Length: 285
Image (tube, rainbow, N blue to C red; front, side, top):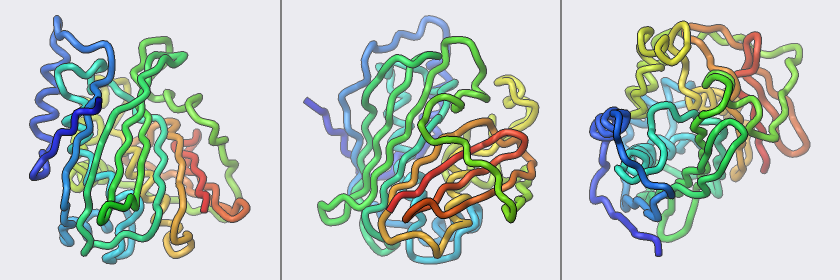
């Protein structure tokens, strides 16, 4: 039976990062299965100033309509609290976000109160370790309007975190086409997105910490690359759709990746890459 943990206010992420650090200490005991727990926060009200800051960092127009990726940051503190619980089977530090699927059932607006829920499901073996899904939903008046499935991988086999996404999804590499846009992504994107998302993993903001994890300099958040890609297609997306992405190689900051997109049937395929792909995606109405 699923245990429902209801929160009356947002939990924040500072305490979760402290628990994550403590969880790396030798001798830490963990559970063997995912906790059968659903984290719930009802009646969430969007802070319009925060929404505007998010829009600016990710390249969206300022609007009361929530970007498809915005509920992710609302639910992120719940996911962090769940994944840093003492009985969670895998340590948070070192997890790699490899794929992300978001389904927008209808447009969602800033004046709507959202009921958020987060669960971790389907712990399973992977060729290079173990992976699981974090399922986040947003509902209005008892009706689900938004759903996200984020897949995380704990690498225990050969390879590096930087290439973890190369074989985790059926989204094919999307070839570069003439006319794609070249973006200048400054180093501050790491700290700017950390501030609006609550995802303060230091590999995105600290050169020293990035090097400890095998990166020559900080890397962009995967969810920033997804949000920025959707912002580039703003105004050309259907009212309801699913957007799947596979996170490939990391985008080093600063960087100059190329973004390309093309119609694919009734939807879109898109890619962000430098010498290698950073992200490939598909939008399906």
